[in-house]
Length: 288
Image 1 (cartoon, one colour):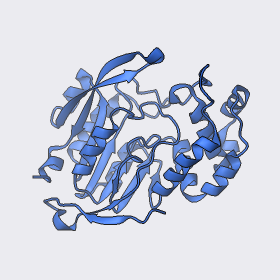
Image 2 (cartoon, one colour):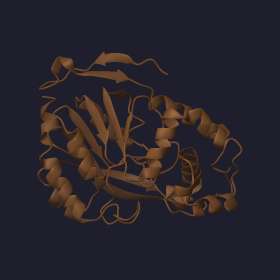
Image 3 (cartoon, helix red, strand yellow):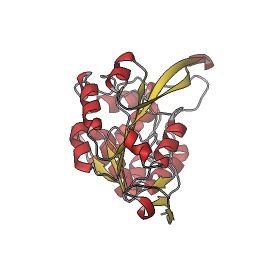
Image 4 (cartoon, one colour):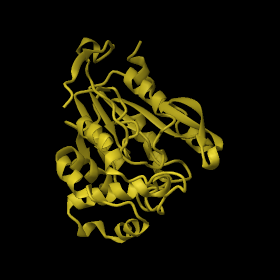
């Protein structure tokens, strides 16, 4: 493990001189994920690391596109996702990494194997087999979509190669040391970890794409509930979501920062989009 260096971070309010962060080596996601914040993560991490906090919680962690790339960690870190396959993978990667590598060592990159594993009920597998299955499917699924088809480019090598994947897994295993895992509904998770020294980063499904991560996990009514819960939060939060009039109206009482991004699609073409980075005023007041 990388020996962390304890660095005092100057802040104000409740934390002041007692705010201590640990410097860590960033990692990158071990597989693609729909909405993985590839373009937005530098800005988000800048905002997150500027807010003093003793605990950091992600209710919608996905494949950890923001979580793993942070350079500083507080005393407590929590990864949460309603998708149990995600949390199982991270838990196995943290605690049973050598065994996970052994299971994947002779895995081949093929359409037939992809379709076989996609058709396999994960409930029939051990936790170790489930983790290997999920990682394989996410590495090979088109655009990192949960129910995606086999994705292969006519001019590129297959995306599942343990030789290329192993350095990513090594870094993620190291970074996950000490992380707490949950698989709760976001609205149940937040009160459990809400303190004046907590920082939440929320990356909910995009407005208009509520079912993109699985049916029944999230619906449009939850945005209003989210604004209500965050309005009563003891701690700080940063939230990222696509720009929509309905979202602006619901979160009008918070700090709303529009961000222009260019996303690359097929054939190298790009499309512009605007996202919102939302936070509570109390979080910024701590920096004054």
